[in-house]
Length: 384
Image 1 (cartoon, rainbow, N blue to C red):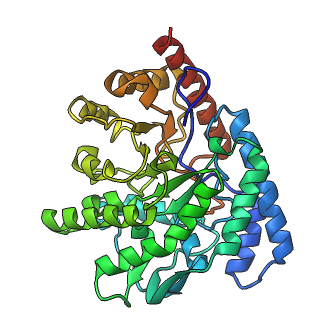
Image 2: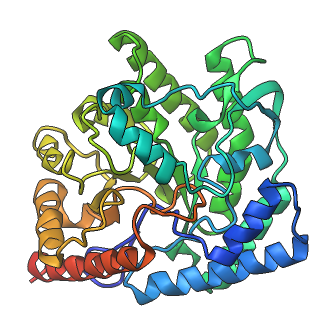
């Protein structure tokens, strides 16, 4: 995450809106009309080339493939791991039940129209029924080749997201939950290592770490134990990988909503900092979390680590003003050092492949423009 120029770099979380004709191909596949593999692969390749070019045009320094090849940031893992089966109706390990009970009218409409309603394929629970193995080498190779072709020589200016062990299904095979999550980490380490070996930055996506604190009825001690287990599993999967090549992202899963049950970042920051990563990405732009920059008045950022707080949010179609973004960046720079801050986004703008992204794509690109301009303004002030 370095630059030849003394300035704050810009990046984001990864997932971006897919082109409509690519969504059509994914919908056909989900409905049993398998598209021609060559046609689909070619369309994904062109989509990656286009989305990388667009990110650069809108001022993003560290770009991604937009997850063009994936039906969702965690749903894709069903195609990468053996030992999992799709089981409709099995239920997900965590839900937004507390929020839904508190605001039933809002969430009835929200889930029907936005977060789930527009997806090209249903979000179906995965259940582990056998030994976990990595079987996604071919799909992973295509993803790496597509991103490499799109970014050219400077692969260090690109990242690729990969799901954390906590985001992979429900266990019915392994003796304990700890054994299960470590088995997931062992299998996913193939993907983690391949991304770094290809010259890219690896981003571990783990909203599930915060979900256990926000949306479960576990006792506090049980939450902490499970959170520690999640982090230990991640680090197991990352063993032997250069920490300087790793980014870690966590968020709260809900996009636009009341979000009164979001756990304060102060309750989980110690767990986040235990992940063997260099860059930590988290929500900081939406109005439930913007004030939380104050926690860095008391929490010391370990040496060599970098914060990538969200400066633009995926939870609103309002385009943040560049001056506000600059002000946010300067707050963090004063607390942890200007060289230890990257301008990021709260979360992805299309975590699931959907026809109805909550932030209209043109608005999203305007947000990226504002992000770049805000970073420029802050950099001029911080390095004047």
